[in-house]
Amino acid sequence: MRRNTTIGFDAKYANVGNSTLSSYARFIIEAIAEACPRHSYLRMYIPRRNEHEEYELLADRPNVESMEPDGSLWRKLPELWRIYRIGSDMKRGDVSLYHSLTSFLPYGLEHRGIRSIVTVHNLEFLRLRGFFSPIHNLYRRLTMLSSLHRADRIIALSESLKHDLIRYLHIDADKIDVIYRGCHRRFTQPLDSQTIAKVKERYHLPERYMLIVGTHQPRKNIGHLIETLSKVESDFSLLFVGRATTYTEHILHRIKSLGLGDRVTMLHGVADEDMPVLYHLALAHVVPSLYEGFSTTIVEAITVGTPVIAAKGSSLEEAGGPSSIYVDSEDREALARAMLRVATDSDLREHMIEEGRAYASRFRPEVIAYNLLNCYRRIGIEIDS
Image (cartoon, rainbow, N blue to C red; front, side, top):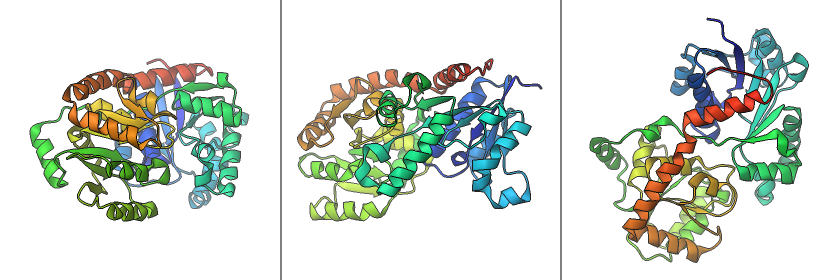
């Protein structure tokens, strides 16, 4: 069947792991493939093919294809192919639009008549300069500016991020579309009591806990949360789920020094399909981060029906909506009060759950796809759904 439009995607991260970038890439490609099954052909460009179940499911769709370097030389130099050669391959493949899902745009697309869009995930290297070396910050700034100036349009994952692009990188506001990211469909599926019981037993979950999700990084402000817990007299504990880093040792030392070993649990390697249950059983999802370009975990929480307590600033208020509770990222007393309120006030929790689920409807895949197609139209790429 002849399709009207062929779209290329930078799918490097769609084919690896389960990081924020990886899940975002797969979500966007699936949303477009689902929204336009008859009038679009999607090519996922990757430096090399890895075994990944969700990627294979995408590649098996009738209007989706996985593309790797063409020729033995470029297969040996996949990253150089991604930077300099990929445009030639897309030109031969009749690609009309290249959507970079990684904030990086290859060179030469404009000379080949291929329109381009870049998604920007965060500007942490500018907002939190002290966490990175000056050389790292300079490199990120220069490479990102190059991609943003060459792109036909830019997608920011939040209004907060759009503001930062204008403020820190002086990008024209008219060139930026704000399109939120959604979450995997698994978070919208009903949970049965048998599944909940199995997951609870598998991970030996505490009876009453507040959930923190994400890789252990200083900007996540985990130390601040641990300090806050030491001042809260309650029967709930904290459950951390995410990848351990060198920063984890610092957190473990602080937990021990405060005598909180029996009130803090850390889980690593939790299966993706078990995450909805961990959210469901939590009293609240707590996000005290100093900065986020956009918080997918907040969207996951309110979609499942879990109250959210988060830090003010950056994009967290956009992700959680008006029914979530927000406090200053450095105010331990305010955070402690918020945690106690949610843990003890069942009426408040029910209100937050109901309103949060209603707010989460804006993050459905079909809504995201609709907004993406409107963005494509602004640069002359028309795709019938």
